[in-house]
Length: 65
Image (cartoon, rainbow, N blue to C red; front, top):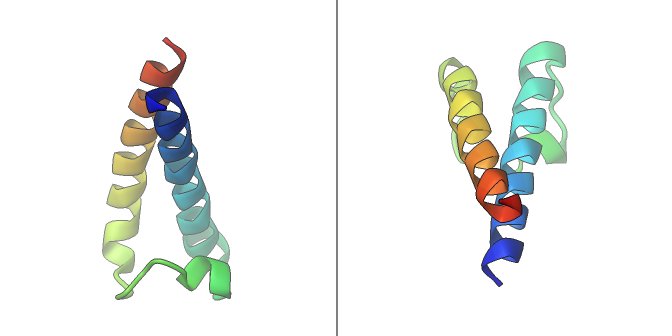
């Protein structure tokens, strides 16, 4: 149960990074890139990508340890 949760959380973090990457790099404005963002704050997206990368990596580390 815990391993499954950590894997899902890790994958969610990496999916969120990919979504932010599409917004920053290519300027995509689709339902996928708008999903989950209540406000548009591009100045915080790169910081969020670092936080999600760290959280996702730690979650996957503990899931597969």
